[in-house]
Length: 210
Image (cartoon, rainbow, N blue to C red):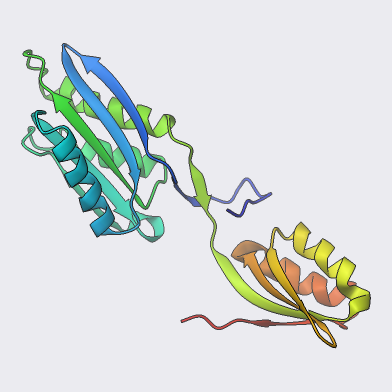
């Protein structure tokens, strides 16, 4: 995963491992799960798995966000009063800038009705705590470049690519070629400095993507 030295940049975040958290409110148990999901099918599969595992729970409420900036999303109250479960869960995901995840909150009813406000807070708190328990990772947009240079310039080109936070794979013939993956926000720096530091001896081309 690519990092950034510019803390002002606001990237989407995601997770690579499932996290869990449980809270109890007036004897009702709320089990929160935050699960990676890069597609609607992934989210549905995760939800069905939890429904089978916790088949005796009264509610399996959820929200997911998928794609750039979580533009694809869905939520469900699963029988709870409207707006008390799915929406608070979704809001927690939005506040955390999370995408490509599904958050499921499983409820075991404890015999005491919570009321609309406390119920919504319980779902919101469960989602918030399970997010806090997760290891969040930035989704950094990247671009593909090919860089060519002479053997004399290899060391300075490698140093520059490291400064730009790029990953690269070299190949050698009469010149040195690097297949480069660079964070999009560092591409301009890399290209300009490449020309400057090698006095235009090195060159680059952008790799076309479908």
